[in-house]
Image (cartoon, rainbow, N blue to C red):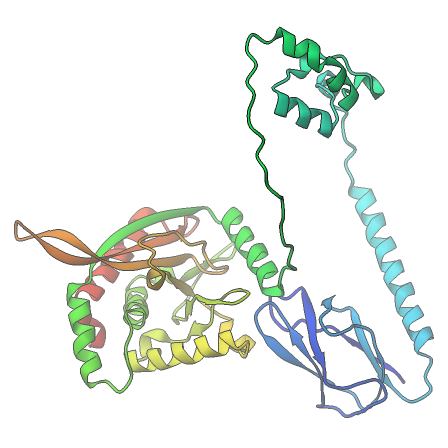
Length: 405
């Protein structure tokens, strides 16, 4: 009996996938456990495994094409089975499902009330409006000859001399010579998911932002001494991750999630680290970050970054974040605000370290400052709570020996 292969949901946010390449062709013998194809999801390129034995009878999607989750992509069965009949049955099922959904929508559809004020609006074709704008013409002075009194291009052209004579001054501008051009590129699965999820977060979670300056002088000196003896090079980002994890341990509400009817306060600390890749942004996770050493964090971040850029991350690498850090300091950004990663209550935006005059002991001297901005979900975190967290973070980074204890 033929088995239909559908596009599986390979991540919690996946809505469609792209077949990167087929590793089997029609007519090939397939065993359970064989890899049929490579699928590009919104976060990584993953392998599509067969769970059936038989012959690959049909491939319904070409390499490079996108397919919604649960759509038919292939059929495995025995030689001689009627593929057309199987596909026809599937189409019938889909049509019946759509009809049922349409009926449900019609039962809850609310009739629209006519807006009587629409008839009072000025009616003009898009081209007529464009010409009028270019010529500085007031359309209320023109009577339309189109349907329902609509102003069209001919009405503008016939009246342009009359209108020009009514103007007290005529300004002649030189023509700007140029050629309009653009490129259109398809939106990647990753970019689609970023757009959807962050839009949902921005408009469903009431964001507010608080910013704090951190003196990095001691941190710079401390990192220098650590790297003199450490086999693993420690970055400022590694120190920030470790300090953030320690601060979250003292402020558990910052490490929580809003679940509509309750608040989930996480006792574990899984820090998502935003990493820029070719098609957008991935957020792999440093799990139990508060229990890891700086060298452990450094090695793990490097490994995750490499696998993210090569699209080799697995769902376990990006699922389960309780807090997120986005660091744009290495790109020369002094300060910015970030959108909260779904399921978190906060995200920390980290700017670059800037050499700045500071006042110390009543004297002006050079110093190194770094700005961090905490984006907070106001349903869980209030200003005082967020400020207390940042104060703790500031103390830890300005005296980094504390995060090593």
